[in-house]
Image (tube, rainbow, N blue to C red; front, side, top):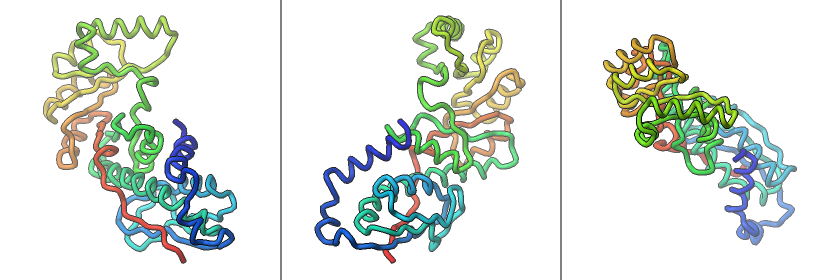
Length: 277
């Protein structure tokens, strides 16, 4: 789903047939001005989305951004000013805040992880653990926070995980079947496969024909062994059981990527509010 579609559907959900509160107590011709006040410390995300929302509700609203996506913010900062129809500003308010608070929370969470592994070669990846229908928005937030997107969905990359391997009848059968499928469908997709232990890693290297090995639930010591076995032949990704407290140890193994689902599904929204002037 595109960002424009997300915004359109969110407005339908929130406004419905009309903002009866504003329409009933504020003259339609009333003009006003408001500011977005930051009430927390973190990384700002959603500035570009806010502009889209305001202009979708009312193209005549005058939006002035003071800060950009990715800016470090603190309590008391002002992110933007919005001026024009008071009814239009109020109709946009909650959706702007909902998006920006969650997006900023994700960007902040991602930035914290990125800072913890600074100086290593490892990159932070997101996962498909996103809010249904909001994936485009949440993955944008990860990028704003300094992370990288894994795959958008099931359609843009082959990712053979433990269940796929078991249902396929083993690693070799899974890889072989995947190549046959891609040939038949005339698809050119990268292939990632999960390894559960060092024996799996050795077997995958022997078979070949993949692009990345996901090392799931490895300890840092075992991960380093696996990275040494792979020796740059394929990309390497660590996943599972990785938290702020131990992420540095995983990154120092030399692994190419660390995927962290928590940066999108276990975050604290950044506090902010829209205040009339």
